[in-house]
Image (cartoon, rainbow, N blue to C red; front, top):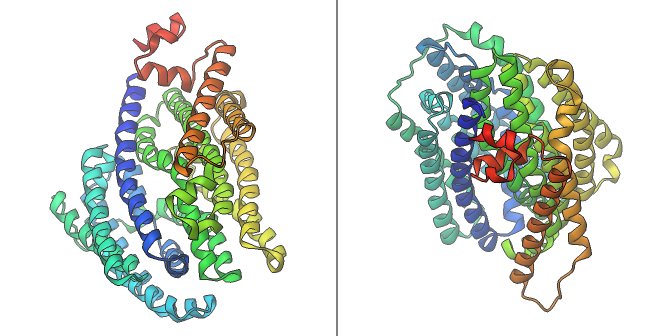
Length: 495
């Protein structure tokens, strides 16, 4: 195995562990808040967040990504990036503050206005964060990267829970988020020696990358958030809260594997972008490992969603179950295009990536627009699943056109065994039922154990029947020091 792959694997493990620690705080926070607050409380925050996210993404020039992508970025690039982000944050905050009453009118809930205004203050505050912390990710200093995000998240968590217990109100969430942003600003200057100053000397250089990053970011926002925009309009705050929390739960298994790996993949891809063979090898390893882990995670959550929601959130959140079942599959499909997005950005095809995201959005918005009057919240979730499946097929076709070193058979070899094994896992869950007399937690743990066992057996069985080829299975076994299960040729390479 080549050194870049060993580095990629080691860094991925570190960042996944760090991300899971970070998300554990978020999960604990969500579970506590779900017991203290109501779906309606979550719905109010979700309604305000839709507007905040929309305005933010409309003005987001992606300067952080531009700095990482540019291997020769100097201090002037960082000064300019910080200035652009500060101007962006001020503009976003002002626009959100002004539009707050309109958001309340759209959702027919006056409580949304004041929450939106408080979030606007947080956006402005976040713009002052030291741009130097981008170096943690760019230089793969993931230990420092983790410390920064962990302490910032922990501060927000402590304040949020304390306020929730004290106030028993939805105000705990935006006030806790504001505390987290303030901590992040102070911490960024403590942890990194860079001191940004106002400068616009490299605006033209950054804009050449950022214009398509902006178009892509807007497209990604609509792809991931516009369903909530529709749900909030056609249903009340309670359904909006259930849909929003279901989305957070549904994306945990796959997204919490993908996002940290993405923080490793992008700088790793950039380091090998001038060597097509190594870049292709790194991408296929990333795709195979993502498929092996994220597909069964999403499918498995869909299978156990009923018990998972009741255990994690309680009976008052029962309406979230069908949303979790559907949206978990959406994020499982997204797992197969995640690494490819970073690959396109690395080779300078961000325009292609941006246009593709918008094609997918146009399909969703067109269908939703025609059927809007008759759609329910669950219909919107089903529509998102259908569009995600269509988009995956289209996106893999785009990758083959843009990256000539790849073949369709390469992608199929990386995907078909995890996908088939996940299907067999779902089938086993349908065929095996546990008595209703069992305690809920015990039945849930048995169902999870059955899924993990059936998936592992099916996956390794398919791999063995295929002649134990190179792929994610061989890669993981080698990294787990289980090389004795590999063919002799692969065993010598692993050693």
